[in-house]
Image 1 (spheres, rainbow, N blue to C red):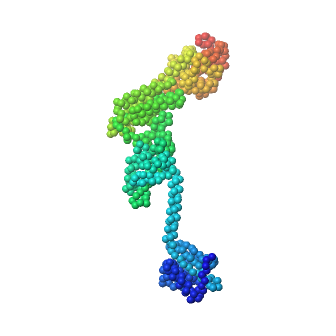
Image 2: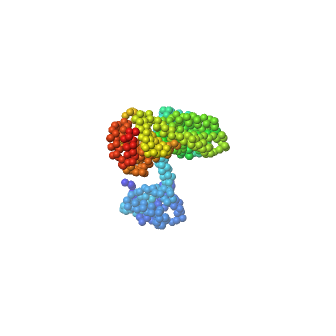
Length: 614
């Protein structure tokens, strides 16, 4: 327990003796000292206190803190006095004054000889310097601790170099993990040693020189670096210069982040965004965003080839979009091949249009390339389609001759002129090829020939003129070309196409007439026969397909083909049936007025079947 200060402050002699003893001590220590009675009135204050509180000319004796100080400071002093009065013991407290300075105060009770508390002795000193120094030391230690924790655990690689010698000063584990080098290797390697094939060294050296000259304090680069296992990775590198403990000396901190995955994702997204999936060529988005910059690097003379796949609509309509995609892919493959071998890049402009760019290629050379491309795609033909691409080229001899867009328009004009010539007979060629294919199969050839023959005999009985006869007979010959188009030909010729199934119920027939219509409609020779073939499976009662026509809504030519086609289905081994003449007539009459026109059915029976003329 603290020793007690016992003195009757009401005894002038003893009080003077006590104060005198303390005053010499506090003056030596440069401390403020004062004495208050139990009511808080000052009985004594030394000169140091008066100077510190700017009260040299003020008579403090008999006054209270409330009378001498402003409210905020008085409140602090009174609170400390109350604590001493309540506890009866010495207290030590450090507090901050409104001015921002700190004081350490000691207050102790004064007792009389009867043990009664009669006053308070106080002394204090300015501890601002010690306080700030201690706070600074604490903050420095805390900062160093945090820096160490961050440096060791931050998810990026950190390495510090001496900016003059470029030698390693320190690094964290993440750096070694990212770069895959050993400690000994890292400590002797200069930063330039990491650069893949020296790429970017000149740029980095330029930035480092700017750091040394104080022109910049930091910079960021993205580079591909070689790692300790000889693998390559992309890194984002941020360099910061900071002063060392030595005068006019700086360190270089590098923060290293592996962005290989992000780079790969970005590259893949760009590939998807700028690449046509079907052909692998650049797409129109690429031509709008990237091509303009790419064009600045091209050499003159500059040649372009525009291309448009011939017959894409016919191919899609007749054989389906899968086959149409094959045509587009074949055209794209040719443009890609020749752009890679002789040019710079190729673009699928959309749909069936392509653009190839060839820098440093003159008009004579591009003409030869154009011919080679045309032959190349022709050799890729499969099935019924003759693959072909209408091409047109243009050459810009020098930069000031014409702009790129004008050259594209010139090439397009040539391309469309060629397309008009090359596409005109495409449908006719496909139809002829289908007829040839059907005729290769004996049973299919038999059915085609029979229906054509029966239709011709009906036209003769009806007394049709030459034009109507041509329409009936030719449409009858072509009525099943859609079967060839949708790939329904038998793999083993000679076997019935439908086995024991009812021919009219098969899904293939619900496609083949529409396929044939689209193909014939595109033909220069046969377009006027398209409707007759389309409707040759319509029924008189409206139950047929594809449009459910009835009665005389069905063209006469189609009604004739409908009944003779069914007649051959009853008698031709192609369909796996072998009816007698009586059974054939019964089957026909059972369906007349339902499937077949009654007049044409009776004419077939009476004038041809019963007469034995077919």
